[in-house]
Amino acid sequence: LRMAPMVDMPRKEVPPPLALIKGRIEELLPPDAKGEIDSGEAVVVDVREAERFEKGHVAGAVNLSSGESARGAHTDDYADSIAEAAGGKDKRVILVCGQGNRSARTADALKNEHGFERVASVIGGIKLWDDLGYPVEGEVAVEADDVELERSMEGDTT
Image (tube, rainbow, N blue to C red; front, side, top):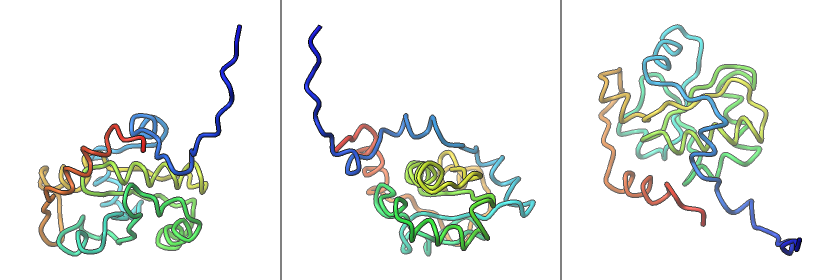
């Protein structure tokens, strides 16, 4: 039995596949997320860029962008800003983005790298939230490049 030679893989630079990430985080459907938000149990964080957030967002959300493919979520500074917004790492944090992928990646980093116990991502993002008629401040427009970016990232391992 021959063993393959060990090769150093640049893991830090390669985002894990979404299927893997979504299997190890908590995801909420919009009705469940809305119930927690309405009860005051959770802080809602929109992880999109400020320009997108300003156009339209979940009512009451705070904007803390985690950057493209949630790369910013891996930093201690980002985790600290989320903890500050939520009132601590032990508080309930519900993340939302355009369609649920960046928020899933952000939730994964917060849970598995920074020790947040009660973080969840909204399935379908603000697009599904808005499609269901839930309260939005401003107007939600998922732009073509969001859809393209999400689609191009789906199987991306580069």
